[in-house]
Image (cartoon, rainbow, N blue to C red; front, side, top):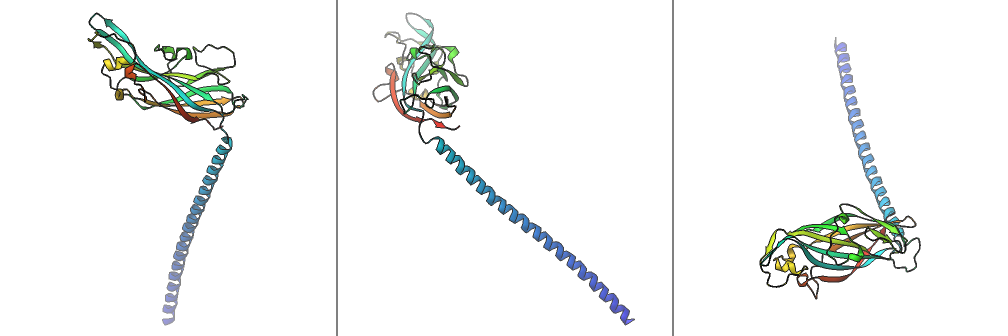
Length: 285
């Protein structure tokens, strides 16, 4: 009887030992799997970071190689700012303004550091895109138009020249081209001319003081009690160029609409300003 009891006890111990061994194996296996996953993730992160670093370095190097020299730039912009109005009705004692608007014409001269014209520094295609108003006036509605250079500093607004989204230029090598539509000479002979117009600054506004002559220029802003800070504005846009080697360039231009300078104010009629700039076109393709 004692021997039988001892055998049963030994069998139970063996069964218990087997269970413990199975549990230990399972735990060790789980730990090993977890450690493997952790090591794998760490290795992946290190490798991914290395790849990102190499890609970034290659991108920077590629950009640097493409832009070792400047091909196109804008060194100066000429501005002319004034004001005009459309009358709704007039009499001897007063007149009513239907639309008081301020406009700024701007001529952007794209140049190349090298005077000799080659396939590299001549134009194949040009367009303007991504027009943004970084500062909007509190009075009026701003918009941007293409303008014939022959109409520079004139207050005429041609509705069909309104830039709604993207403006594509016709690039030509002809001696004389029709500049009524957006056109540029491929040898950089003429500037990009745009007109910023802030319309409806005053609408249905009646002036009762007609004792002094009314001049249709910036003096109207003062007569209509328009503060300059209420019509101050800034904008930006991208200019894209493809040269005759099919290389592609981009430049972002930032414009603060000039309403006064060191010597004059739009209140006195108009502001003419030639501003030195440093807008460089970088090659991205």
